[in-house]
Structure formats: structure tokens, C-alpha cells
Image (tube, rainbow, N blue to C red; front, side, top):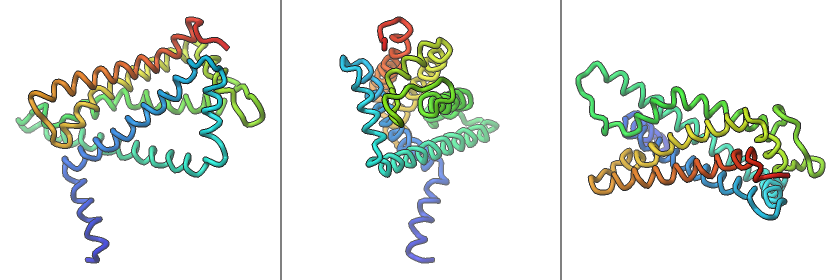
Length: 233
């Protein structure tokens, strides 16, 4: 066996164990959580008194000079999604296979809730992501406005989209499901990597709940503000 193959074999062997899958779920979950925070910060710029702020932000992200790092980040995030979903599914299958044995301890598989809810919330959130891309990137749902050729008017497109109650309703539902997953994922992430303490675990759960609720409020506030007439063109 070559010296190159040994680290690969150790990594594969580590992942094959349940703890390896939990660690992968925790690490990829932290990466995706960071993206959710960054995406929310970008979206909240729609509340800026300068109506061009969110358009300038979008123009910066899609500047041709940033194409390579932007696609590298997208590929990195997609890899994190694939690993997260794969590890989550495999943990759920392992837990399901162990059910005939009279050994059940809820805290032993802290990621089990995320794995179970993935069966119904995962497809809904996944469908929303595809819909969101088709809507605000592809223009396949509603015609997209442009400031100039190949320069979308993001603010106008967001407001136009959320004026449709079905689009807003789907968005709010997806954000609630996402944040429900975030709540359980955030606090269980620490247990997945072996951090569990009777004093601090309840605090982590409360902290995770607060963070998830704030994210849900931030995301859901945009379609609500549009439908209520607080955000206008």
C-alpha cells in the first residue's frame, strides 16, 4: 500500500463508522449554516433606504471578474449539500436497521431528527431552491426586469415575485421548514462531535432556537413586507 493510499483508506474507514457520518453532517451543516446567514444578510439589503443597494450587491456578485471564485463557491456548497444529505440518509438507514434490536436511546443519534424530517422537508426545500433559481435567475416563472442588458433589477424582481401570494406562501413554508431543520441541526451538531454536558446542552438548544427563529423572521419578513405594501418599487 502506498503512502498516498493510507490516508485515503483511513478517511474512508472513518466515514464508514457512524461517528464519521455524524462529523461529516456537523461540518457540512456548519458550512451550509454559514451560507444561510450570508444569504440572509444579502437579502436584507432590500430594506436599505437606497433602493439600488441590493442591485449593486447582486451586480458585484455576478461581475465577470468574480466568475471563477463565484463558481468555486457554488461547487463547494453543492459538494457540502451532497455530503450532508448522503450522511443524513445513511444515518437514518442505520438507525432504521437497528430498530428490531431492543436498544433505543434518543440522545445516541442526535442527527436522527434531521434525517427523519429530510424525508418530507428536504424535498420541499429542494423544490423551493429549484423554483427560486428558475424564478429569480432563469426568469422561467415570471418575466425578469433588467436595469440594463444582462443586469437584472433584483429589487423589482423580488417585489414582483412576492406580490404573488402563491410564491410568497411557498417561500414562507420553505423557510419555516428550513429553520426547523436548523434548530435541531445546530444544537445536535455539538453532540455529533462528542460535546454533551447536562449544563450546557440545554443552553445550546435554547440558543439554536433563538438563532433559527431570527433567521425565519428575517427571511419571512421580506414576502410579508411586500404583500403588506411596506416594500414597494
